[in-house]
Length: 210
Image (tube, rainbow, N blue to C red; front, side, top):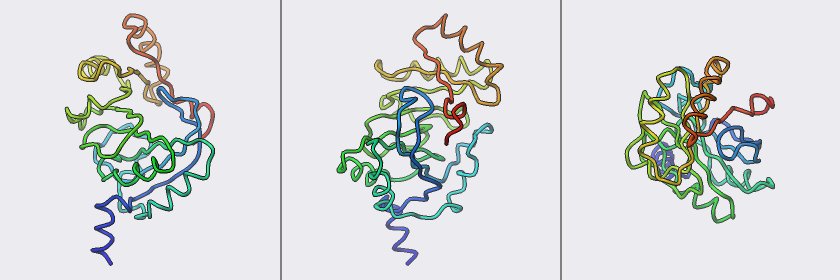
């Protein structure tokens, strides 16, 4: 049974799912839109300010039949799914995106870009982390680049990554939640001086929703 489960995991027909829920997107370009979120367990990127550290250990989250997850997602009126983590690109995402598209559901992913990206995506949110930077191959796939600003040096990090994405990629600066009051004024000033950037907020935290 273990060999069979391992094969299904490799095929992406099972994934370690931490949680799945219907909500309103809180960050970036699609902020304010309803979507079904699928949070995959497992991450070794190791951001010290991560607000879902309970997702890091994949062994804590059950290997879940992806057909049942897709069935859950298809019950809701918003036909868009956000796959997030953890770091979802650790896994084979070809099967889940193929099946979602067969049901007419748009596919969005939030990733650090630290691993090769599999699957067919309508929208790729690339959020690079200094602890494990994106693979070069993933920059061209980004629909939006979201840089988390934790300190002043992150503006330089933002520009380094912005230089690598495609010309149509939308650029966002987002304050790390615990430092938002300190960093937001700096972000506002920076965007006014560098208007290619947009401000992103974790609006779901202000709305008290997942």
